[in-house]
Image (cartoon, rainbow, N blue to C red; front, side):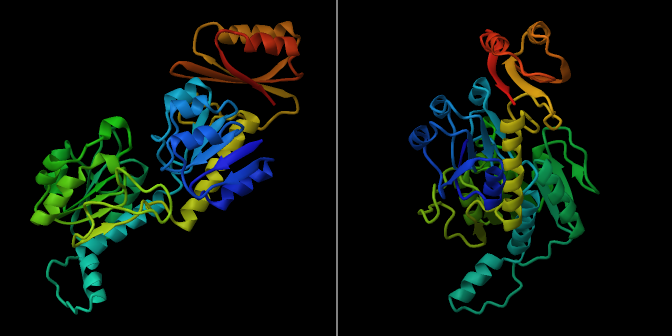
Length: 397
């Protein structure tokens, strides 16, 4: 069994997979499509972060691939539909680096409010600029959070602890934490907030979500932070509004196009601007977060490959399975049509095999059933199920 881990995934993932019997290959950088096609022929598990894109072509070239682990929050770098059609499970870490992102954003809010980027640069240039001009406390200021999910809600809690007022906008119906107040529209939030922080996902519909119109609607001398996805913001417009003085400062951690490997050249129209913090997509990159992510995602990959569990899969029906029984387990991923479960159970009955536990879930066009039985299914019965027109795959443990 072989696992390929890209983009400097934490050693905790290696420890988990090696302890389960996997041969693990580590690579420091990401791979482009053609490189992935060449590399995945005999790989069972693939681990990536945000810089590796897994396309339908890549999946078609990976006949042994069982699962993909996104060792990060986002999964938009994977063709989830194509992966589901091939029965390849995709797993991520939706909670493990939340605190790290929140702490970075809080640090950036304080740094921008105190104009620390320009202060420290002048000190390095040998200029003593001891002045309170443009420098403010964050206490009493209003933070506007766009996207009130796992990160947005925790940011809300920490910001309130600093004495900030919090307003938020989300298209989903999410309950407010603490004294935070939901706004009825994005326009209302932009007109209210002294700091706007984006925490939206990378779905295609969010491309270009925040542009010139939104920057113009922000309060004069407000600050802007994007630690979500690079493609959601028009950075040409951000540059113009910073240069005009309408935006007092900005912090950006994500970019539409990012270097593929450590040490590669980085270019952006935001370079060189006063009171603009640029960081290389490190929102979740703390030792604590990466260790937790490594362990968490590797456990999900191993649980799926070695026991059939799809707990927290983002693209397959979710079946939370108990530990492997003393008997035998069959996992059957199939097209979600009437009669499949009845036929499956009939095959067990015809084989004289007693079912001791069964777990079923459906998702969109797929159904997934785990069946624990007292005896192994005969090869003929397994062959019959695999030959079914509705079978995506069948695995036994």
